[in-house]
Length: 167
Image (tube, rainbow, N blue to C red; front, side, top):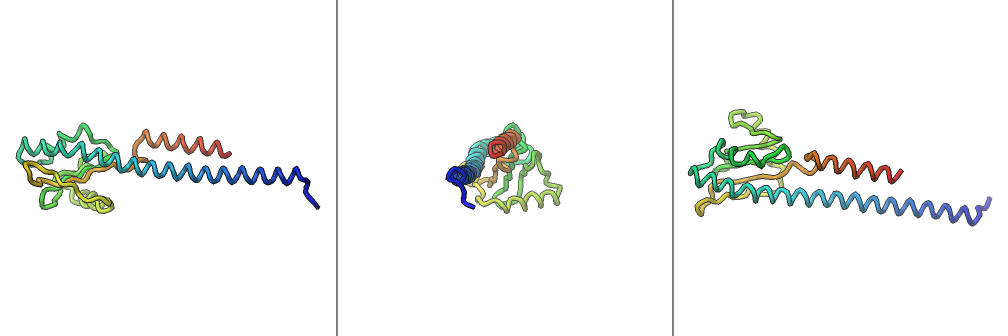
């Protein structure tokens, strides 16, 4: 049975619309993914740039970096979405903040777990310079775009609108 010209045109139109939607959806989701990756890098760099002068100031005032003094200086800037590791010049942990709380030095198992997470990071430790010499090393970054509550809501909205649009 031969299809009419109208049914053939209509079928091609539906296929074309479907292909355009698939291509645009793919581009949209790849763009979101790229934007999130760039956000993670920029936010991590900004966090390190914020913390470095604070650590230098703690060192200048106290002559050393102590866990309590570090926490007092950094606490206003630390959230559950960031992590901060400060190591002495021998690269031994002095201060660790992860998952919204300070990891005490005496909790060895939790300390080892926190240090293991740092190995997944692809950036090197940043030197903290005080009085012209390296006084410590810093690793600070976000846990990721999706760990922030506002960003989670944003992504939920984007995906729900996209899903509704595709239906």
